[in-house]
Image (cartoon, rainbow, N blue to C red; front, side):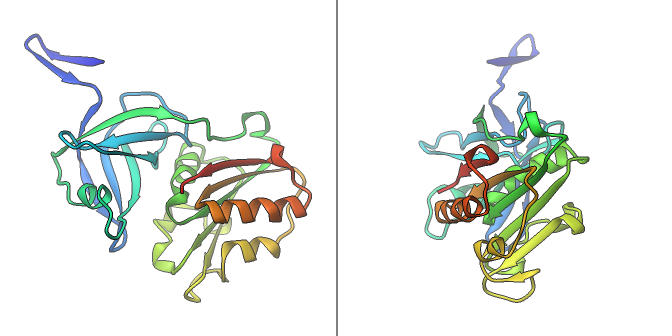
Length: 226
């Protein structure tokens, strides 16, 4: 797919110039690109590569469906190959983006009738940021599990009354301990849709906890990061 810019110039529509790298912590950052040239549903992901490199990685879209910029949330992997390369990109550098992919998203049949509880570990918060920014009137609660409060990525973006931070290695969150331990303390209304995104251990443990509280697979939507 190409976009005609001038009669003698054609630019591949999958290529985007980096607008900025927004550093959130020492290891986490937001890669900000120009507005998406494709339609996507909040919760979907894209494949990102650097021109001339042989590898690519998939990342959930962090920005709103109609956002001014297309953004992804990235955590630099210690000793990793790809994320450090993304981190060192500069404004004006090119990346290649393909997608969108995936069916992870808001439960449309229960959008207005249910409360939507988003459960994320680490950068698994990315698709929920997109969903909340895309639907500011959504009846939601966001439960975010991290090691330290420093990893509460852009928490000011969320309604404080709807955001629960669980920190396992400091006491600066709303709950001291793992996200799964917090879930064990909670009761949820039967009209609740759950969305889980993050590492596989958190997801499997959370699903078991929710099942013990009477919620079946039809109530639970899952996106596994690793």
